[in-house]
Length: 240
Image (cartoon, rainbow, N blue to C red; front, side, top):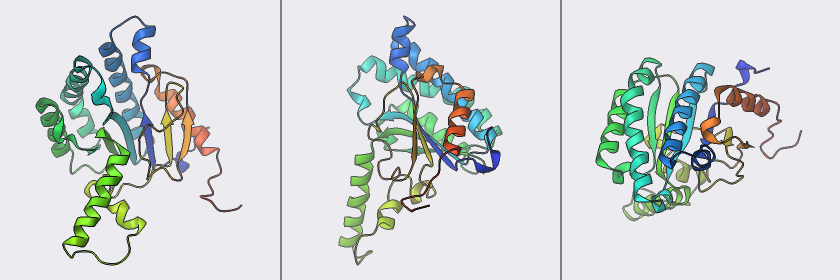
């Protein structure tokens, strides 16, 4: 049974399998992404209802620009659609939306919709919903190190570089409220890799992989995977 008193503080999700779902169901890849967007909305609702404090989803990686122009533009049109239809509900549920990654380069309409969402929900105190958009973890770590180098050059920082210095300069650091490292990372579709997602932050995360394609991933399966997480003994490198 799900123990509501032992919920993970931060759950991160690699939403994989939209394209394979589309092929399996003989529909366009964009239809697969639309189905995936609907699945994401259900998981956001359930995570908020369960009292999870942080939910992070891998929406668009720095590598996803390699896909066809038609698919990429379609993904960002769906983002605009999601924001337009669901912003009121997110705000009503007291969800705060934050963005991880360099979203300055995404299409103008998607950028405006995202910024409207960030502004509208900025004072909300419920679950923080982090959308990793044009995000790549190696890029994030490199960016953090370069910010430290700049601080040293300009005299704002002295001494040895520490883990805490790097953590504060990641997207998950000060600019997004110092998000705690994920307790649980879920990846759908049967793939068992991180794909450049939260590499620094996942040092002691628990991983669960499921064969379910993302558009078929339900709130009920989400709860089942959290139950599996709760059955694990987390020692963080120590001995029991």
